[in-house]
Image 1 (spheres, rainbow, N blue to C red):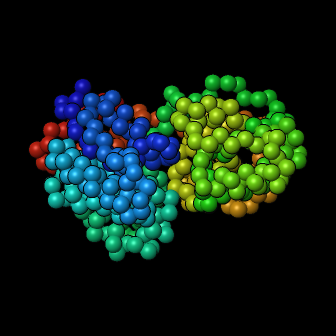
Image 2 (image 1 turned 135 degrees about the vertical axis):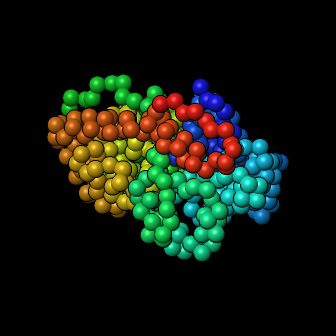
Image 3 (image 1 turned 45 degrees about the vertical axis):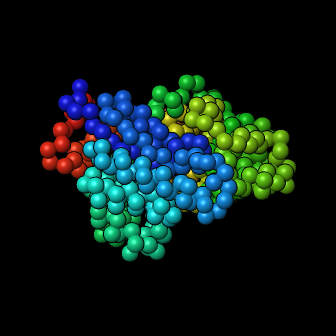
Length: 370
């Protein structure tokens, strides 16, 4: 048991919509509470109050920021440390930076958990404004060797603490198909330009020409849905492609388990949870080799990696999986073994070590059970 129930102010978004950072924030809050910590959850995407304020540009920024700052200030006065889920761009300036400065003003250590896949571009443009805040953070945590390298290029030290995958929810409970003559494919990214779902659809058209029984599920929401649905119509694939819209965590787990192959067509990425969740669910992953993905999986060992914006290369990789049962079985088994390291039991000691390192002298330490 803990000598002291550590009090943690956890800053980040919550579902809906479901997404990597929102899901990680929600999951971490539950896991820390399960360890005996008191979690003061500070939601950066809380509903507007009053609701009409969210419909008026300019007013909505104030309607969200003022309660957020007030909540941060109160929380910093009663917790042992603040853990901030941080991202690039406006999210950094509106949410992460204020949390760091308020923590500094109130003498509360702040652990910044930076997760933005566009970190390289963001730091190149905004380092002068970002560095003063980072210098006041007690620790900078990143989930991948990719981001460790990006920050290292600017002389900024980081600590790698991987994302957490719920292996109770995301798991493989069915035997793999003996043949993949009618493969079931899944895309699990939001329908936004950086995720380039159009490439996945064009790749699927090539797969469908070889395997008429193939089916593709596009799970996610976003501004490109109508455009992508039109592309499906133009490619004559309406009978083989379905769009689910927004899906919660339980629904996503079911979709992963039902998929033979998961496509990740992203053009920008850090450490996509969707890749890890797919591996944990027994799906073979075909992904673009962008950003942190090559740090996350090994080509031809735990996944197949292809260049971005190349439908032919993605289709060829899928057809390798369907045509080579031995390859499909090897990738599946390797992925299932590899993803075990992202369970809470493996991540918890690393995160708790960071917490202990930033606590002020005299703060009762938390005992961490292995």
